[in-house]
Length: 54
Figure (cartoon, helix red, strand yellow):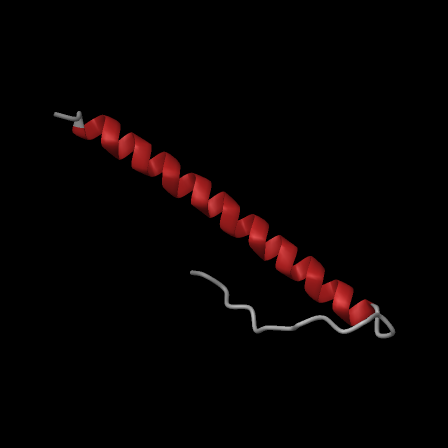
């Protein structure tokens, strides 16, 4: 049987890792958004609506 405290610790680490990944994706989305607004003469990319995660 698994130790409940160990399972909880592992799940908390997973949550932290996912939060870091989400923040990295938000930064990337902002950079791509800024890149599109600066380069008006640049070729158009497929633009999709970004949804912020809570």
